[in-house]
Image (cartoon, rainbow, N blue to C red):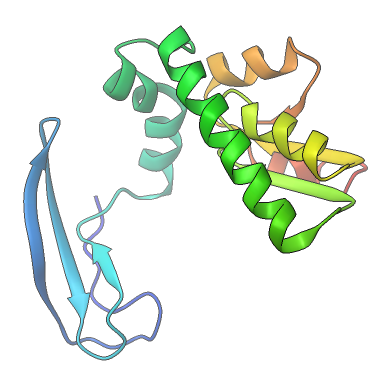
Length: 153
């Protein structure tokens, strides 16, 4: 865990405790910057802890399993359809879409269909969810670094 000593948005070193809670067994402290008002968590996971959390622990924490559950897929589908309609109303058609943290890929599919996207790519650190996506023909990578190593970038 890394303690944050200045606002990550404006660099101000003046902030106060905004909220303290226990969430699923984890103590969370949120602070508010006294200059710009952004709310941020401190301490927060370092880069390696975040990679491990999203690759292994995140889905276990929220679903008690690594693979997509049928209930989770239903929620993701509804959210994806709603968000695709919202994007279409704002953007119309687009040529490409990158979804970072694409989970089961439901948003990739919904946005590609609704906005007539030719190139739809996802980033998903969870091996189980990434495998779920790739087994359905979606182009999903484990990290931005992995994507950069392809000819697409």
